[in-house]
Length: 267
Image (cartoon, rainbow, N blue to C red; front, side, top):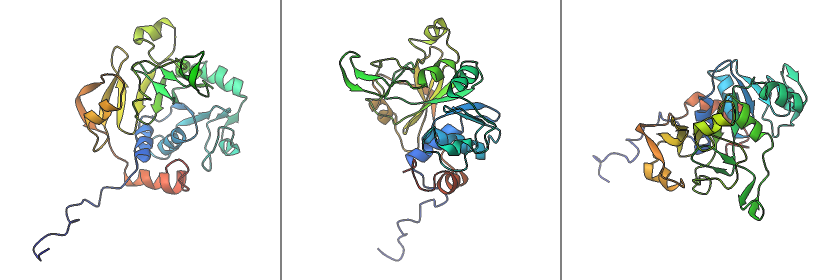
């Protein structure tokens, strides 16, 4: 290298924070939440997203956990829905039955987080079996409260890795209904709300007027081909596909120093 040649790193913008794909999914999910909403929270990545939202743009977000804690403010990272830390600062602790009947089935939950082994083009989720129900290749944990959340929350969000086996054109078993076979299918069943967004490690997908998934934004450095190759049907893309906003420095500080300092879910 001569004296006139630039150093290899001179063109790198050091102001752009480094982040992992999980941190990007968490911050993207957090931005979907609005102040004054009630959200039925799960542990793991959804829990991080809700607590990040509450510490940033949604201070009045009311977090409700399946175990029955109402408006929780956990003082540390909960490791299960039965973790006593969830009662920290809660306005109430009710039986699980009341949480599901009065709050969820009563239409008092704005947002629910879901996940599953398979998600199809209409947002139906399978967490029951892979293969034939009577003779499955894999027996999965089942619904838990997922079917009730999918059926009764005013809107649902899904966070999941983007892999072709996770996104078949049709799920092997409908554990939690999305738009069934289109928006009219969900309406015919009399279900409240419906899925709003699916956030993966490649893209953010939403649902069109027919209730079918399309890619709205692609994460930095991700191509359309990468997303399509990880999807089991011909996926539609928005007319003007944009790049998913990245985590900012404060997002990353909160996640790494306050919400998950031991890297339980971020690593």
